[in-house]
Amino acid sequence: METIPLWDASMSVGNAEIDEQHRQLLALNQRAAELIANTHGTHTRKEIRRVLNAIVDLVETHFAIEERMLSLNGCPNLAEHKAEHDRYIELLADLIHASMLKDLKLKKVASLLAEYIQHHLQEMDMGCREYLREKPTT
Image (cartoon, rainbow, N blue to C red):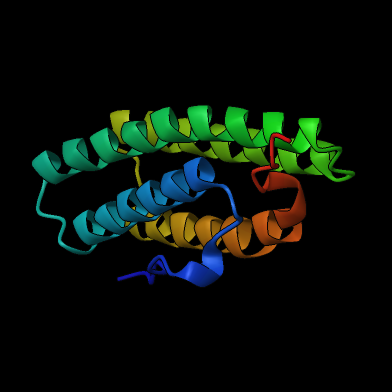
């Protein structure tokens, strides 16, 4: 099974809403990895597709919030960050489409999800941490 990191305080970007969404995203990715590791026919594929759809729903909301925060706080890497968000949503759409065609390569899905979550949370978001923090409203 692919290793999805567990949430810990070192992953915090200093924004309670974004941190909670990251926790949820890690949990959904963990659930997908578990389903993929224990696949037993089409029923599991349907469950995997449901989890992928849940990930899409969460990331669309999450990415919009992140991008708004990055924009409001003047992040110089906003365009790069948004481009990565767009690539990930496209990847998820491709995976869901492949699952409908029963052409889903489960080990590849697990690997892609694990790679993305680690790269995005631990590199992209941590690199923009100062621009994601909740700002005092003085």
